[in-house]
Length: 72
Image: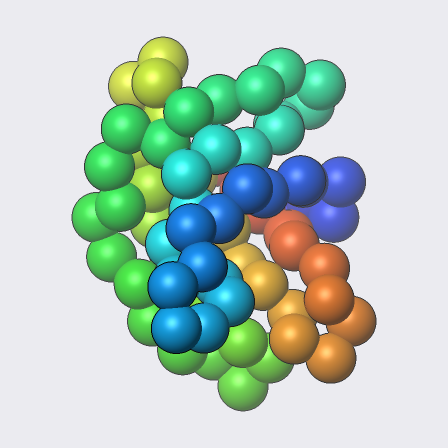
């Protein structure tokens, strides 16, 4: 998992509700769709499709208030 991921999220009743964009290796990507979301012991995680059709897993660590990600 890459720890240098920056994620913009929609936050309705709780953060993070769903990611809307993220920065991956210096490039900003809009989230085209969220295919899945689940809870880990550290926080929420998402499988998303970026605007360039690639798939990523983004995970939020609540205790560290930080994101990690990987291309899948």
